[in-house]
Length: 226
Image (cartoon, rainbow, N blue to C red; front, side, top):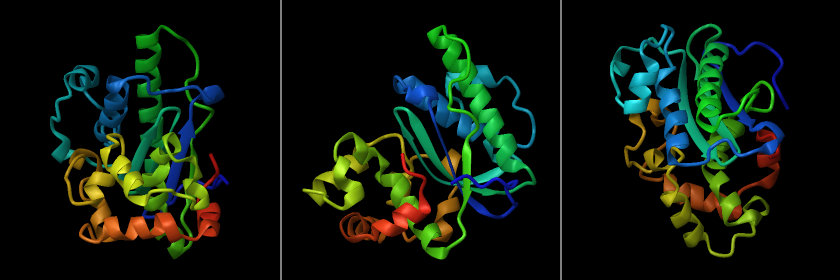
């Protein structure tokens, strides 16, 4: 379900969208990197200067001086969609941030692949996290999304080999999971924002237990189905 009200400052949201007609929106490594760089560079109340040059060079310049619109707490990029866990830091922060990210990536993608028109399926969805269990379980769900590529039954808790599933998740490059496991991978995006609610020393044990024993009803309540 989409929260139809304007996102509120200091509230946490599940933000997600998919490619128009469910098309793939990340076709190679550079596409993934570009979107992730957008998450870092566009998280600023001020206009981004020389953004194309900086992003193409993958240079992290001046990020420490950002006046951030949001706090990104977790993320994953899938071939045809993305999921973000975001806390709004400024009034209209999520709206402005997602406008920058969506427009910037669409322009990049359309120019690279010589296409025109919208890339994503309408406006992003932003679902507020109202219950404590939703707040706790959303990072698990986000980090498990890559299992759709190898273990489609994970949503029904029918994982054949939990260790194999975890090994695959830890090898997947385009999520915040490694940071949650204590391996700093995307500091310019997360900036440690997730550390207020998770223990990196225990996270792998917790998510392995949730993967095999978690309450599927909470998943249904927390997440819009893909």
